[in-house]
Image (tube, rainbow, N blue to C red; front, side):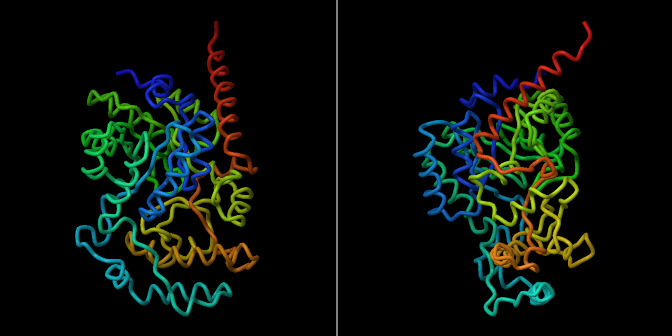
Length: 378
């Protein structure tokens, strides 16, 4: 079965170039969409009220052009189905873990917060459904999910409203399950990716997913993801059979990004080997900048992380405080500071407007395609 072509995907989604941009920043989403790509807002960290405000702003700035929303609804997490409150979940965080973080902060010259805070759980208690209802009140053209098969209510809502549902996968067997569940777009994400990712490289997982879907007679389009920060990498993915690219890390060093200034500086200076898959931030393996924080959690030889969402609830308030201190020049905080980013960070060496990134992707892609077209004899 012939894979979906980039031109067919562009026609389906109403875009000029098959570049999908995941970002937590509304400005990046709008800029990419307005430049001819497809912006996708990461909505999981927002309350329903906050998400509504963000999407309203995007609506006002994209003038009817297409964009989407990513709402992470994990297939597995601590307390799932138990209808626990935030306080219930917080009570499951062992005191020795709080003590461990307090000691880690002191080692870096930071006094622990005398009234330690616990972050919000990741989509516990039906928040995913609440966020989805908000998203559906806006003219979104895609809804996406990671960390498992989307819940039935997301698939059903997509069919009811005529909105495609995308899912991120890190293995071919996961792609088959997603298609069987009714997903409309597969993002085959390699281990090079920032954030939650699997262990198989992009160069391998993309053709594996395409072959697995062809074997079951599925023509579901596949986007490539993981370490893609240039147009030539995107062209290589299309040569593998992908219909386009799903990107995230490259937008973290754009002028519009929400990334803390000190973290941007660390990314610009980082090489591709300065990232690590660590569960020390969320409780699930996610690729991020190497720092004293990631070193403090297994498998680097430190503490075994708690499961999702307990680790995330414990870590996020502390890391936000670390970011604030790092921005003020605190050396201990700068050593601890980390953020989700992929191995493509080694190619991210300057701050640019998001629109310029899109245009450079297009130019680089075209040049790579021309090189490929002229590579055969005769």
